Image (tube, rainbow, N blue to C red; front, top):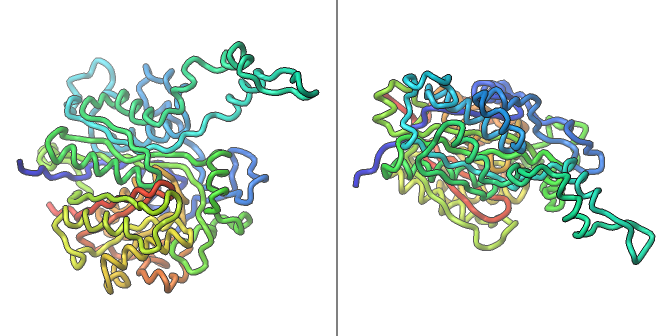
Length: 449
């Protein structure tokens, strides 16, 4: 069976730099920063008090009027995915059930039974205010001391009654894909992937395979997550991954591959891409950002929370993706790296790049965006892919913010200072989970009609 070709025809991004790929990409080119002191809750009890925060995100504008009541059971992560999906579909020129008004079914240009979805999700944090109120109503006087304590008996009789009956549905990871598929009537294969920072790449890779084998014509894919909550901040702080010396200068906090890097910064956001079978895209005159030509994945089997010093798992994923695409290391002329800003993760990623590209690792331009937006978790990879595809489309590579002096031990050609001309033809984009060890890579090719 012949493999179908797959292209990117729509991009929807929501990040601390703006909503829509144009806002985010323009801000990256202009070296703006979306990292600041946390405003959504009081961070003063934490050593790291900064994050990439999205100021305005109105999900009700991104769903049909008849679906707006459902937004009450959307956690922040779900809202981000629904907003990104809306902008991706609009950007691709697709007329789905969400875009077309009722009674105008003749304007639909998508066969819902051939429209799939694969979305990466993270560990969604429960609404602490809502949960705390319910827990507070489940305490009673202790028979063993003068204090009051939580009891399951009181929780069952009173505490649970203070939660909405649909409370749990706000926090299930598969609800990102659930709401997106309902809103846009995606009836082809759908899946949720929860593999940390590798989630988006794995989701896009699965969507690519779905179209390639003919099981769908279009897929909406990527990921979204918000780590911007006390629990998300605490987890990363306990794992000692965060910058703690830049609370007064958040713009300079995250420094991908820089010799003075000292950690990552939590963030929120995500991106969804529209992948489409090439002949269908050309037939409707769609704008094509890039072609997806290869996918590979692997696992760091050595540790659940520490990267391999030699980056072996990530190098395996890249080699698999390049073999799938039929390209050699000499043909790759743009690398999109995660660059989260921790010493060991950046070092591991750089080691993987050197193992694949050899001496060329010091020459091939490296795109790293997290200095401006922080670590978006399950949504990070989709933003990286969106920026890479847009770099092809616009012919410019945004510089890495705060990478002033590339660490000699990394030995990479990170684009910094001024934006660079993008004359590249083939790009490799990679991602690895900071916890769990999953790695993934995708190969994109510049589109030439």
